[in-house]
Length: 331
Image (cartoon, rainbow, N blue to C red; front, top):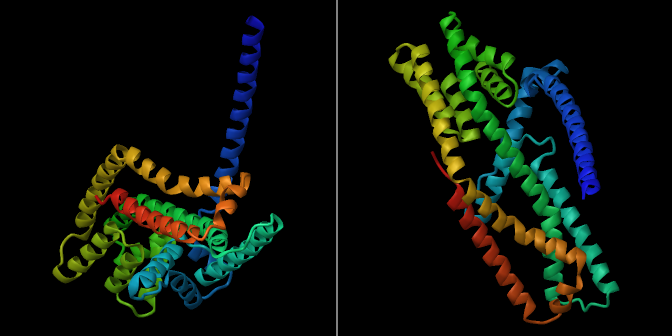
């Protein structure tokens, strides 16, 4: 028993050493990457020789969203907006083309695999394999874009109170509003640095400040940015101490963020349950198909399968949207 205990302690010591070494190495690597990425995207484009007109075109092209009516149109508009927030270098059209080609190619491979297993190719089989190919070819890129957009949105919310403090100190130091915004473009990293840089460029090329700030609020759809835009708009029309207004606004935003974090902590169990209910069926379906494809292919030949499987897909989509609305908390 003592020998076994010594072996366990030795294994735990080795694991702890390896874990600490990997953690230190990853911290060094990520800190270096963070230092290299402190410059925001707009300044990076300007440093490579792009003119301000070209930078405005590139940044606004990334921020464009599709507007249309109907369920499909709203879904596409939502994806285009999330793609713009994610700041993916590949355009939304190119990503859609790549996902379509990957789905079609994976579908052909799965059809060849099913044919090699002497499975009869029916409508149910094609529907099953198409769901499998779509889950991998379309679902994974879509989840990656959504995750990246949410991460940058949270980063924008965290950076905005700091940007307000820098903006307020610049006003107290005697800088005009345009110079204070230009200071944010130089001092703040992405995403807020490039976004205020776009505001500065729009003002420099003829747009008024209120319209540029409202465009910023529409792109990100954050109440903090909209309150900032409204504060500047009202102050420009009625007058008043702008620095004091923004100081109070910064305090309100920080208190709101504190309440939001408390709400997220209290609702963490429900949100995790929703994620599990949405992700686990897809993961189980994909893994079970990889481990034992005959489990699905044997019943896909039945004529009733196409109706039952299609009905299940519709129920899954309705449940996913319902869960999304339940856990989408507004503070």
